[in-house]
Image (cartoon, rainbow, N blue to C red; front, side):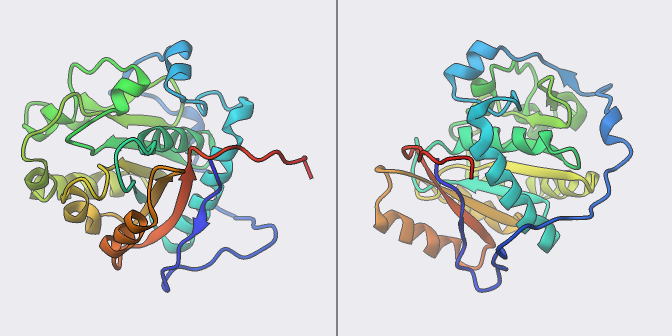
Length: 263
């Protein structure tokens, strides 16, 4: 995975060179989180490894790229007051779901933030399966008014990390994503906690009109491009569809790692 590339949006502030520090105070409740109403589900290390989820263990040497991506994403979001981040890709199999999970976990390791990951790929939901979660109740029941929000949230035994999975595909996904219920849900998740970053795993941008429908409801978007899989034409078409959205950057996924010395 290559490092995030700054977006070309004229309204986007470009990162400055040099060391950047922030003075954001740490909320008093972050070190004493209690998941009384949130179901806690333990994860299996072997399952995470098979699905390339490496950021769960913050001491893993393979999580460094996600930590760097996290720092750049959080910097841009804090500068603009953004708290909802949509992640999409041009086409399927670009690795956007794995990217979203690892980024959310890396943010959760950041001691001043909490992370909520929502599976909004209603045609091919994969977040729960990638994590190995049991999903008796999920976004399916929430949107059908068969469960409350606290019933469908899951804490995968990682402090400051919560998941809202989708168990199975939802029919008429475009209509669902454009509904008042989904708009209310996004607003509720955004405003509930000031320290929370909410990441939405969206469908591929060019596979349907789902993303175009729901994209204006998010603060910013991250585009995941697969090395050797997505053509220049596909990327240009994505940028056209993103239009005036706050494109926070692009990530080149599935690239060969570059060997660098510490300095």
